[in-house]
Every structure is written in structure tokens, then in C-alpha cells.
Length: 182
Image (cartoon, rainbow, N blue to C red; front, side):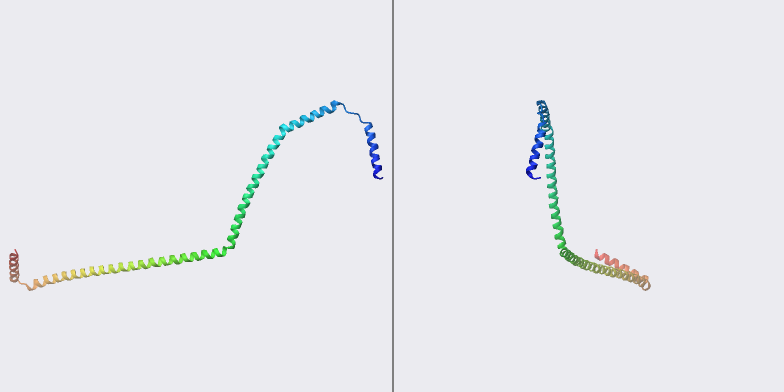
């Protein structure tokens, strides 16, 4: 079958179907058309604004979410770059911290040694001062002891070697000397 024969067969079939077709009456066209127009009006005035509002809010949510995600993505990139930079410089940063701690330790050591030397000098001078004071006190005690012993020995000697006549003469001489001083 060629194309021409197919067209002829289609024309014949259409003419047969058209012969049986009756024209619809006006109420069969108007009522469904009015029903359709009312349906379109209801959808246009009531459903379409709700759908638009929903779609606008949904779009705003999606845009806000995309913006938030983009912001978090930028922050994450910045943090990643920071950590990548830190990791690249980790050995150098470790060495610098180690050198800083070593320098701080040396400085603290020098300070402690300096304080210890000052304290040792002070302790030494305090010890020398206390030793001198102890020596002075000891000398004073020895002198007092020697004076007390000399006094005791002198009193003992005087008792043994002075007679009552010598004692009377000494008392007389003392009284005369006191009288002359007045």
C-alpha cells in the first residue's frame, strides 16, 4: 500500500463517520462551556493566589537556604584554608614555640640565679652581722665575769690581808676625801 491509497482510505472512513454525525444542540455546548468557565474562574480567583503565595514563600525559603548554605560554604572554605595553612606551617610553628619556650626558660633561669645571688649576699651579710653581735655579747659577758671574779677575789684578799686597824684607817681616809669633795 502506498501513501496515496492510505489517504484515500482515510478520506473514505472520515466521510462514513461524518455521515452518522449529528450536530449537537446548543444546550449541549453552552452548559459545559459555562461549567468550564465557572471552574476556570474559581481556580483563577481562589486557587491560583494560594498557589502563587505558596510558590513565592517556597522560593523565598529556597533562596534563603541557598544563601545560608553558600555562606556556610564560604566559612568552611576559610576554615579549611586556615587549617591547611596551619598544617603546612606546623613544623615551623612548633619550632618557633619551642624556641620561645627555650628563650623564656633561659630568661627565668637568669632571673632565679640573680635573685639567689642577691639572697645569698644578704644572708651572708646578715650572718656576718649576727656573728659580730654574738662576739660583742660574748666579750661583754667575759668582761663582766672577769670583773665579778676580780671583785670576789679582791674582797677575799682584803678580808684575809686587812686588819681591823687598817679598816678603820681606810674608812677615815674615805670620809676625809668625801668631806673635801663637798
